[in-house]
Amino acid sequence: MWEQIRSNQIRSVVLTIGMGALLILIGYFLGLAFDSAIAGLVIAILLWVILSLVAYFQGDSILLGMSRAKKIRPDDHPRLFNVVEEMKIASGLEKMPDIYIIDDPALNAFATGRDPNRASVAITSGLLQKLNRDELQGVMAHEISHIKNRDVLLMAMCSVLLGTIVLLAYYGSRFLFLGGRTGSRRSSSSGGGGGAQLIILVVALVFMILAPIFAQLIYFAISRKREYLADASGALYTRYPEGLASALEKLAASTEQLKSANQATAPMYIINPFRKKGLKASDLTSTHPPISERVRILRAMAGASFNNYDQAYRQVRGGKGVMPAASLTAETVPIATIKLEGEAGEANDIQRARDTSDVMWRLSNYKTIICDCGAKLRVPPNFKEPQIKCPHCGRTHQA
Amino acid sequence: MPVAVWVIIGVVVVLGVIVVVLQRSLVGLRNQVKNAWAQIDVQLKRRHDLIPNLVETVKGYMKFERETLEAVTKARNIALQASSAGAGERAKVEGELSSALSRLLAVVERYPDLKANQNFLALQEELTSTENKISFSRQFYNDSVLRYNNQTQMVPSNIVASMLGFKAGEFFEVTLAAEREAPKVSFTQ
Image (cartoon, rainbow over all chains, first blue to last red):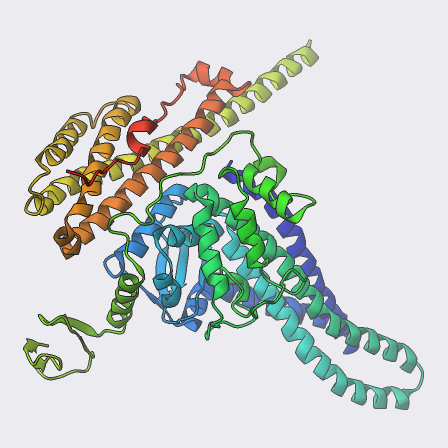
C-alpha cells in the first residue's frame, strides 16, 4: 500500500522530462540565433547541471537559510518534536528529520531535503502557536508524506529546471535583441540569407517568451497533484483526516504573507504563501489546490485509506480520481475516534503562545529567568552584569 | 539429446532465479516486520520507564486515588514480566496498562494543583506522546505483518515461503474495547 504511490511518480517523471525538453529547445533556439545551435545546447545543459548539483547537495540548507529557519533540539519544544516523531513512526520513515522553526507570524510549513535520510521539516512560529496537537499532527503528517513520497527532491529538481529556463529565456531574449541588431547589419552587408535569419530570430524570440510560461504550468501541475497525494497520506498516517482539515481551515483564515518566501520556493509550502484572500485558485497558475477544496475532500472521507480519499475526491471534484489505481485496495481503514482535543493537559492558545515565544527567545540565545513574582525576564546574550533586578517586584537574580 | 538437456538447464535456471527473487522479497518484508516490532518495543519500554516517575509525582497530590495508582503500578509490573512474550500476549497486558493509565490521567481533572505542576505537565506530554507512538508503531507493525503474511500465503511466493520456512507473523491487536473506550469519570461523590 505504501510503496505503490511510486506508480504515480511515472507521471511526474514524464512531466519533468517535458520540462527538460523545453530547456533543450530553448538552448537550441538560443544557439541557432547566434549561429551555433550546439553551443547554445551545451550552455543550457551546463547551466542546468551546475544548478542541479548545487540544489542536490545544498538545496535544503539554502532554502532553510533563506527562510531564516532555526533548528531545534528535542527539549526546545517537546510537543513539536514528539509530534514529528509520532509521524515518523507512523510513516515508517527510518531517520528522524531535522526540525526547524521560522520566526514569522505568518502561518505556513514546508519539508525539504534530498532523500528520506536527509530531510527537514520547518514550521513558522505563528502556525506552531495556532494549532492544537491534532492539527499539528495533521500538518506534520502532510510534510512527512512529502518526504516519504520523495516529493521534496522532485520539487527541488523541478524548480531548478524551471529556474534555468526562466534564466535562459530572460537573458536570451535580451541578447537576442542586441544580437539581432548587430546580426542584421552583418547580413545586410553579405546579402542574402537575411530573411531566413530573421525568421529564426522571430521564432526564437517567441519561444523565449512562451517557454517560461509553459514550464511554469507544468511545474504547477506536478506540484498540485503532489499536494493531494500528501493530504491523502497524511490522513492515512494519522487515521484522522479532521486534524489536517481543521489545520488547513486555520491556515486559510489567515491573511498574513510569509516574508521570506519567493516565487521559486512557493510550492514547497503547505499552502501557497502568496495567495490572495478570496482568490479561487483552481486556475492553472496556482501551485496549490484551493484550500477550501482540500478541506472538503478531507471532511468527506468515510475512512482513512487512499481508497476513501479517492472516493471523497471524486465526490467533491467530480470526474477522475487522484490516486494511482495500484494504491487502491479494498481494505478499510477506520478513522480514529478518540482524540486529544479538550483532554487534560492539552495546551490552550495562551499556553501555546507562551511556549512558542519561550522557544523563539531561547533560539536567539536569550536567557529566560522566571521571577518568583511571576514575571519572565529575558536576558540578552550580550548582557554583562552578574546580577539582574526584576523590574516588576525588585528581586535580584543571578544573570 | 543436447536440445532437451538445454531446455532442462534453462528451466532450472529460470526457476532458480524466481526462487531467489521471491526469497529476497520475503526476507525484506520479514526484516521490516522485525524492525517495526523493535519500534513498538522501544515505545513500550519508554512507557514502563515513565510510569514510576508519574506515580511519584502524582502521589503527593492524589489523596483519594490509591486504587487507581495501584492498578497502574500492578499493570506495569505484569507488563514488565511479559516483556519477552509474543505479540499476542504482550498486546493483552499492554492493553491493560493502557486502560489503567488512561483512568489515572482522567482523574487528574479533579486536581487543579496537579494540573499546574510543571513537572507533571512535562510528564504528561511525554506520556501522551508515548501512547501515540505506541499506537502509530502498532499501526505500522500491523501493516508490515499484513504485507508479509500476504506474501507468505499468495501463489507463487507461498511455495517458496513454506519451502524455506517463512512463518506468518503475529498481529499486535489491542483489545479495542479496553483501550479505546473513554474512561467514565463521575463527579458526584
